[in-house]
Length: 241
Image (cartoon, rainbow, N blue to C red; front, side):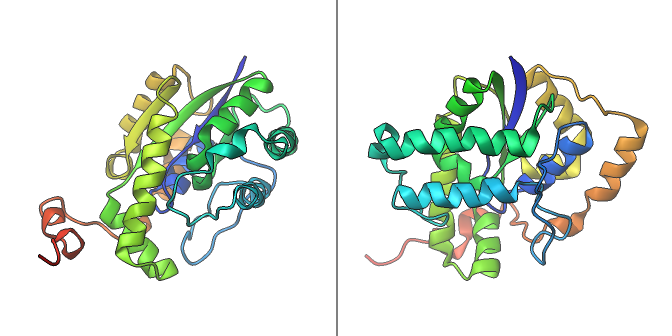
């Protein structure tokens, strides 16, 4: 089986930067990449087709991208789910064709990770999972700034996506990386990912390292809550009697 890297992480957790670096190291980008915007100045490094497909999948299960509740457990055994499995294989082929090391990234997939694990194996691909993790308060602050979500909703979304990504991939080859560690030192972080996944980066070179150094900058980090301040953050204070 050939490998396929699946980046699973909560929205605003550095998933775009991590996926972008992995692609600069030789991972394959999708054919219809989502471009940059005010919130992701250097690009999202995810498939437009896959994102639209995931929104349809969530809607078919009675959910949306910003739903913090568990994914509908009854959906998996329906004929609708079977149809989406077939469509997912088509989306993957259209986006990555026969690429040796595709990188598929969309935070939405955290909530239904087993779906893609099954689809990838059906395509004779060995899933390799990368899970970027960022401070829940930093994620919630970023979502509040971008989408106007209350901090409580952002924290619930972080919890749902993070727990699902971790719990559903325990039996897989995977690497869990802290976003701050990745942003401050991508080389050891990518060495760790390669060792955890038992893969090699085909484009690792001085040239690609310079590209990555230019790509990664502190400007990508908009919220950074100091660890010593997190326990005292207003959202963590008890309220009422």
